[in-house]
Length: 131
Image 1 (cartoon, rainbow, N blue to C red):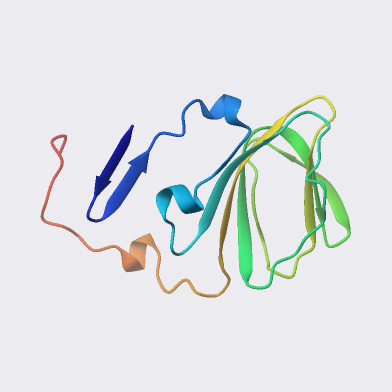
Image 2: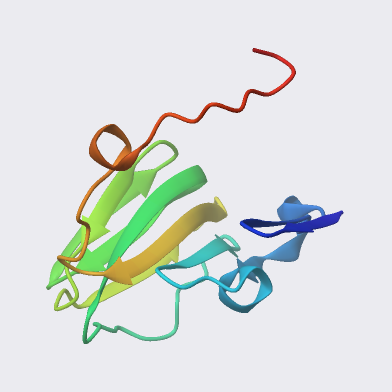
């Protein structure tokens, strides 16, 4: 499925369970963030430690267990965990030895959020069929 309107784009990534990694920047023409859906098979690690110049990263673990290395600290992460890493944070992520690790990662420029749902949202007059 793909739907395109003046103010939106909707795509189907397909069976996300079988894709491994889906990067949405180009596909959705993102302008303020990078979003990826990732899966590391059991025992597999991102093959490098990295930091960023400008972007913070927000992770949400969707399923499985694994480990996060951040600034020399190592600890377990699991389904339901969410965490933010400052651009300067040196990070690496690994799936557990017996569990794959599926997570969403959002990158956005640190310290640029000027509003969020409660302060940036504006009521609209239009209504969907279910309201």
